[in-house]
Length: 284
Ligand code: NAD
Image (cartoon, rainbow, N blue to C red; front, top):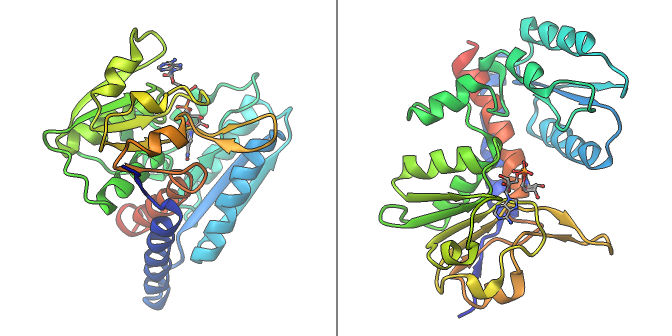
C-alpha cells in the first residue's frame, strides 16, 4: 500500500482564501480589518523565517499588521510594557510573541501577560483550560491545524486509537485534548515512555511531534493508519525532514503528511483564523 499524501499547502490555501473573504466582508461593512502584532526578540534565524512568513500571510489576508522587532538585549520590563501597550490598543486583535525568547527573558511571564482574548497562539492557561473543559475558543494553532487536516481527509476519530509522540505545551498536550474532544481514544508518549514502537504499532492515528529526525521508524507504522508528522528538523545538508522515516512509512500508512508542506502551512492558517475570530467575536 502506498499512502495518499495529505496536502497541507492546498488545504491551508483554501482556509486562507476563506479568511481573506471574511476580512473583505468586515471592511465592506465599515469595520476595521483584524489586527495582528508580531513581536520578535533577538535574531534567531529560524524564528526570523517563521515570523516573516506570518507577516506575509497577514498582509495577503488584508490584516492590519504591526511588526515589533526588538534587540536581543531587551529587558523583561521593556517586553512586558510592549505587551501592556498592545493589550490596550484597539486596532490589535491578536498578539504573537515568537518563541523561543533569549534566555534572560521569562516566556511564561510574557505569555501570562497577553490578554486571553488577544492570545491568538492559544498558549495562555485560560485558552488551554477552555480547550480542556470542552469550551475551545482561541485554540493552539498547530493542533487546531492538524484537526483541520484530519477533517479534510474524513478521519472518523470515534473508535480510533490516536497516539501522540511528544507532550509539549504547544503541540502534544493540546493535541491530546483536541483528539479527545473528537472522540478518539488518546495515548500521549514522551521522552520517558518505554517501548515507543509498541504504541506506534497500535496507532490508527499517529501524531509525531518530538523534534527528533527519523525517530519513528517506518516499519513500526500500523498498515492503513493516518500519520501526521509535525517535526521540523534540518539535516546537515540543509534539507527539512520530519520525525517519521517517511519513505518506509509511506508504504504502510493510508494517509501521510509530507515535511515540508504538511502541518507547517496549517499553523499559519490557524493563526490568521484565530485573529479573525478574535476581531469578529471577541472585540466587537
Ligand atoms: P519540545 O522539544 O517542546 O517537545 C518535544 C516532546 O517530545 C517532549 O514532550 C519530549 O518528551 C518528547 N520526546 C523527545 N524524545 C522522545 C522520544 N524518544 N520518544 C517519545 N517522545 C519524545 O518540541 P515542540 O515544540 O513540541 O516541537 C516538536 C517538533 O514539532 C519540533 O520539530 C518542532 O520544530 C515542530 N513544530 C512544528 C510546527 C509546525 O507548524 N509544523 C509547530 C510547532 C512545532
